[in-house]
Structures are given as C-alpha cells and as structure tokens.
Amino acid sequence: MTYTASYLAVAVFFLLGLALPVVALTAGRFLRPHKPSTEKSITYESGVDPTGDSWVQFNVRYYLFALLFVVFDVETVFLYPWAVVYDDLRAEMGLFVLGEMLIFVMFLVIGLAYAWKKKVLEWT
Image (cartoon, rainbow, N blue to C red; front, side):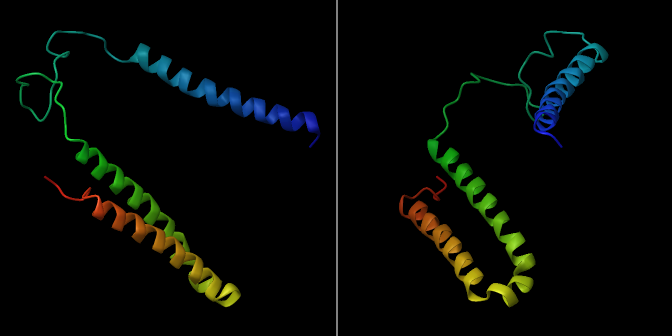
C-alpha cells in the first residue's frame, strides 16, 4: 500500500463515520410519525404525574457515589482479561505479572480507603 493510499483509506473511513449517522438520523426523521401534543411534552416518570418544580437540587454525595461506582466498575473490568490469560502468562513472566496486578489492586484499595475516609460512601 502506498503512502497516499493509506491516507485515502483514512479519508474513506472518516467520511463513512460521518455519513452513516447522518443518513440514519435523516431516515429516522422522515420515517417516524410526528404528531406533537401537549401531553407528550410534559415530564413523565414511572407513570406518576409530576408535582412541583422539576429542578430539584440533589446532594453532591449522590453524584460522588455514582462516580465511584463507575470508576471501580471500569477498573474491575481490567481485572477480567488478566485473570483469563494469567495461566498462560504464569509460565512466561511469573511473579512480574502478579506483582503488576497487585500494584493495580493496591491503587484501587488506596482509592477506596480515601473515599471511605472522606465519608463519600455514607448514604444519608
């Protein structure tokens, strides 16, 4: 593949990446039914009609709790591939791979201890 051809491939993928969502959203706009009404524009949640103001201030602790959950959830996803291939890696790299993963888990535990100390995990 020549130098210019590689740029051409990147340009084609870029154009496809832009064109596919535009085509899909445009087709959806023309194919979907469009019958606006006042009932469709009100806030609806759990089958209960809304009462009061919809702008409610939540305690920032809820957001921190949710963020911590996402962070630890994503980080534990990194443990799964390591656990799957650890048996094969054990013969090649031995304790080095185990040490690297223990360092990773240690950082997770330090983060959890910090969040616990700052009382982010208390649900009040």
